[in-house]
Image (tube, rainbow, N blue to C red; front, side, top):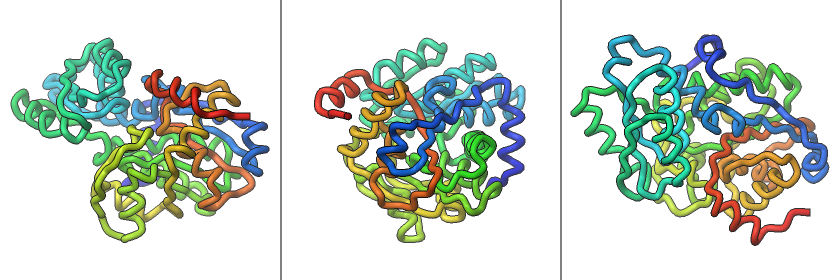
Length: 320
């Protein structure tokens, strides 16, 4: 299990490589929510998501021999972009396995960073065996998107920044996919401010962490479609599950319709471009399903949205 010390070490290690993203307040959205609402803008992070934090912490920790060998990962998008970018900055060769359904702009970004991109299967999980096969064949270092303490500690640095900028925060809402971001952020927040509630939010059709949280054991679900495809997962890993069970106060789900409304609202009112996976936090806060304090933070995990999806949302969602 990672500690606040691990996260602080990661913060110092990656400080010159990543952005300290802003925490912004929205007067209009606060009025709609009925409480002060802030946004932690990881959509403005390098590569457009929080993933750069963990990727830098992990790859800066590699030995020179490991860097010479090169790295490999699998991902539907944001982790792939982060690994590709970090590899280009550190001069490391990278192989990235992505599903054939990956957003074209994310694939293009990975290739633009110089990674060797291989498209395989319909989901990130389909690409995983191919990534492992490549790792063994080429003797590469595997960079896991979630199940790695260095990755989790890197992601947790955003939690430290939230508490530094708003130490009086009553609740922090965090998107949950595999659970790595949640483990890092919740560890940091609970160590700094035990009274602050940490709320995890998942799409209704992709609630593997919430199902495991409720059952108090790792539970595999049958994944269904959700517009928040960046949060796809069948079951949390052991390391992530341990962190969630220790530090998370509540896990809730939101519908795709609620995610679309929240996403349109954020874009309209804050003028920030986000992806559906980031919008789950505001959708969760507005749902009233979990604790709402006087001061609430919604972590916006990324801004790498499919423009066609965004256009479709704006064609059917009205925000006033």
